[in-house]
Length: 336
Image 1 (cartoon, rainbow, N blue to C red):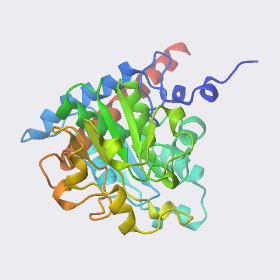
Image 2 (cartoon, rainbow, N blue to C red):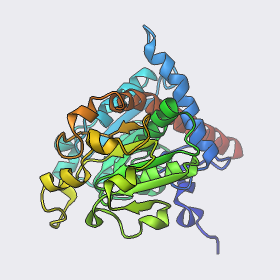
Image 3 (tube, rainbow, N blue to C red):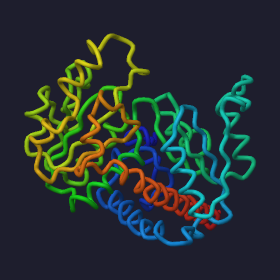
């Protein structure tokens, strides 16, 4: 009886037989070499964003469908810009007015879109594992890019964060990184931790109240701190996270004001990190809840740089995944 490798290692679903990216579902399980290749490819696209003509022809003739079952501003906009700058044709499916609102299943919607010769689906969904399920069981021959699935993963956000650290702090290896706030509900934090550990960060700290830290966080390779000042001591990077109140089903916090007092990033608390530490936030920012404006808009903040790098990272993973799909399709045809 053969064992399904994808069940033992979910990252295998993302890769061709020769280890190239064909979907991008999670940072978990991917090699340091592959994550570095994504960053290097993204770096090469940053210079194109500064030219008068920003497009390159890598996805010319390909159709990219944005399937956002959850609200999004930055992620959806940067994916659309990334596809356009790769010269792809783009379809933004209006989920509220699509056939799924009339009772059509997600699988039937995707099969219909595949029948229209779509080449890539960018998927954001409220259910953890949705992108993985689509890639493995629904449309494996369409490149699937995970734009966030439930509380599970947000790999492109993690990789744009890695690119931000690399461009502003040099190599990620040896750096001390603190992730602060609502870790429990954060798909971003999970993807960041996996990427940081793989890329050689010296220590990944998670800081927050016990009610907002997963009980298994240490098994992921992160060190929990409940005191903001101790957790920020000597950090190179401080990543703040949004309080995801829409995912909180119990009273996990006494009040937003109390949270800001203990865990909100202020200039006073930031002083415990290294003098050249950078401050990051995946957005949207709740000023006065997770971070004060003096820090968000201050000299150590690279929050807007993250948005800019997001386009380059998403261009990189889209180009790499499409290349992997094309190579695999050719290989299958030749073997017939």
